[in-house]
Image (cartoon, rainbow, N blue to C red; front, side):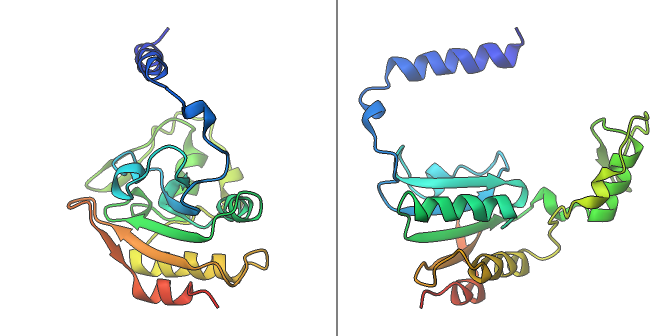
Length: 193
């Protein structure tokens, strides 16, 4: 067993010992909202949004982007579990700003090993065993945080499965201060009607 597995199982045992009545929490989120945000390990939505177990749905992916799967989750969140408000929250210093679709395609065609980055950009081991399948994926990279939040809110709003009466708010989490900064154009685009 790896050290990480041991640490996770030990932490879980501690959690279980103080689980209390959390097993009785209802499936729908108590505060009736959802957050779409980045998977970056520096972001703790429970802390920056004041959440406890059972409060809200938190959907995470690379960049906090409104991918088809993220929209699928949001639709399930409101249609089956009653959320009434949504937040799209990107963040400063995001790894999705460090590459383009072309860079990712090139890296994956060289090998499937982990790439590294230095002053000259992304580097691959070129150990072989790469794939050209990456060219079929839009990696939803980010070149401008405010613009990407706006685009994601617009993409969600434009989806025919999203009702117009759900407000969608756009924010950027500042990794240096922990502050949520509204993107007014995004929140305006997500305004409920």
